[in-house]
Figure 1 (tube, rainbow, N blue to C red):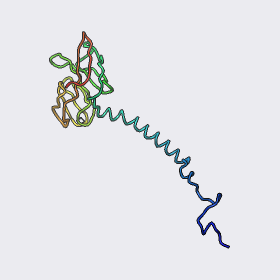
Figure 2: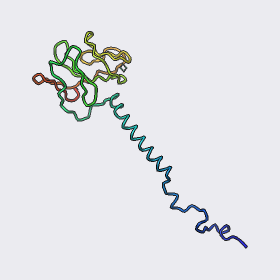
Figure 3: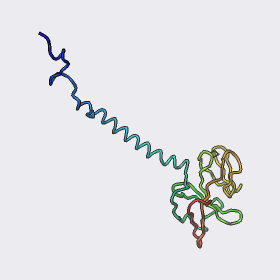
Figure 4: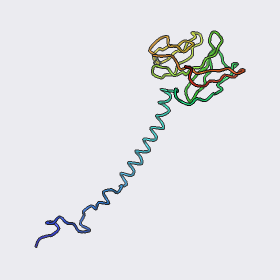
Amino acid sequence: MTDNNQTTGMSQPGMNQPDKASAYEITRRRFLTLVFGLASALGLGAFAAPLVRYAYPVLKGEVYEKVKVTTTADVTADGIRFDYQDVPSMVIQKKDKSYAAFSLVCTHLGCIVKWVAKDNEFECPCHGGKFDENGKNIAGPPPKPLTQYNLTVQGTDIYVEGIKS
Ligand code: FES
């Protein structure tokens, strides 16, 4: 006698043949892999986004707020630090007694520059880049000036609002 199932290729229920529906079921392993993968991607994105923004703050094109950052009485020879839209920044008083505000993010590779009052320049600790009191790149590898903000003085309050063009 011949087994009809072997010769015809037909299956009967309960004969260890995967049914089509189970091929599309999400196994526990696949589900956990998806959940952890998604969580890792979100976590990495949440971690990386501020770093990228910190390193390469492209402020142009964003919506700017007018923000009071300090007062004239608070600006010493060492300048005064503030963050503008999460970007480390500084107000300095120039030799002509006017005020200027800059992003402290070096235009070379994004290190944070320091204002060196005695030399009247910004210096980058990473590769020796230097910028004058107008933010102009004057030494080292930085390819362009520091980002300068629009600054206004109202009474004794100093405000910044967007990028100076
Ligand atoms: S990052 Fe400033 S000189 Fe290289």
